[in-house]
Image (cartoon, rainbow, N blue to C red; front, side, top):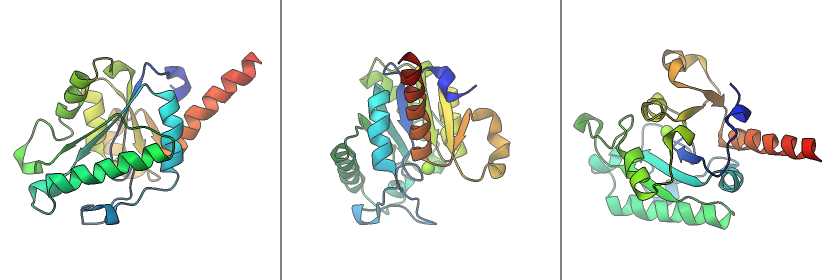
Length: 196
Ligand SMILES: [Mg+2]
């Protein structure tokens, strides 16, 4: 199956993990404030392209740094407001951001790979269809989260072999969000060229 076969249009929704997808992950640390938040290369352009394709764009992020007391709910919310406005300034769109502050040990229903954040988003946007949704992430828990509700999954990695264990949960692999957006964009161009 190729991405093209999915015939993605604005009836589809896009779910994005945050750290490692939208912004650079910090090694052994959490992004605690806007100063530490750094968009990955090409993300703002990618978000513009993806906003023109998908009907809904939802960010779903585990942020257990809150549960550990390293940052407050308020700081994370402020950071997300800034992230959304930067994406909008670049011509893109994020319809909603969900994050789970719970510790891994709490086994929260809202913490990926559990599906609480997916259900919350569908409650808010009843037009979301999980079968017509793509989950993009850089960890296995993102892939399991997507598969549990029937989404297509995109794993972002330049190093495939280390995730062989979870391979069954992954539909597509791209090095980064920019490459994923570029692939979808080139599909559109092919179709337009064929018509004209
Ligand atoms: Mg991540």
